[in-house]
Length: 277
Image (cartoon, one colour):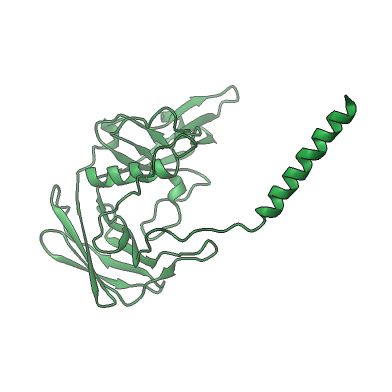
């Protein structure tokens, strides 16, 4: 009996070793669609300085996206043109917008680069003020007299879709010129929760603050198209798993062979002490 048992162990070890040898070279396929450029950023109503980032998506696992310089970028807010100029950082373009928000109107982005023109359109929706709406976080006092908080990354079934940025000690303030802080956003979706088979992974951010510590909350309006785009992106990222459906391949709003979403957003900002939440 023991001989048979040891034989089985030896057999499975040999099989496992062979599998490892066979798979020691892992290959990664190139994306099925190779985009010419990617667009990040847009127009916001909180700051006069606006920022848009252009890059060439990387096609290799260990390669970084390449910055796109010397492009011509113009945004028309249904009244006037807002002309962007490249900053000292390659691939990041900036403009000053002194115009009043043009709510429920189309903002049209036009990019000219490498003798090609790309366009995108988004609509500016007015944000519902934070004081009139639900705050997507929970705060409670603990036995030590400090405040424990939880910010879920996703909540569902709201009348208006929104992005949020909630910062406190250790979390940076929101800055439209920074494009590397997507992990600090959280989202309220007008669409329902994805299929129950999708692993939501309990995505959340926890914090502990003293009673006088300040929390700053930014609330961003989203057009219906942008909200749908974000939802589709999360179907392929945060909510993907073993039982996921066929990838939806989120489609942005930029024309031509381009990737990303040009957005316009109205922003409300409020500050609270931890004890006020």
